[in-house]
Image (cartoon, rainbow, N blue to C red; front, side, top):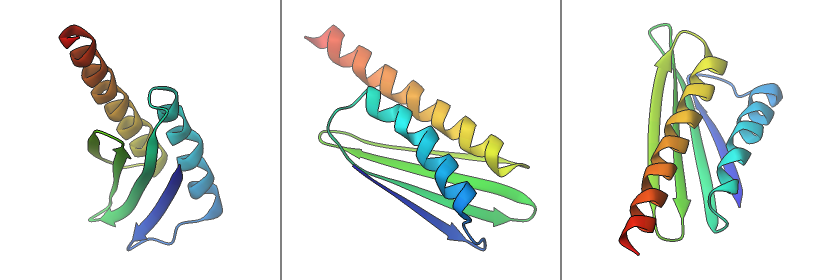
Length: 96
């Protein structure tokens, strides 16, 4: 699994990179076959925008969050991805 952290209109510091990697590592407990995770951090009009894309073997998940604080946006977008994963896993378990 590789975690790519990119910044637009923002320089990604080591602290931001480590925080994103730490929070995104929680996603791997749901999927053992995660190929790569891409996080894009942006600043537009005093809003901090975080987009996360998870590419697992059979599914592609994407979430975006906009808030006034970058760390809060990271937390909220990881929660959105976790909800999507739980929904996907529940759908699979009900089907089989």
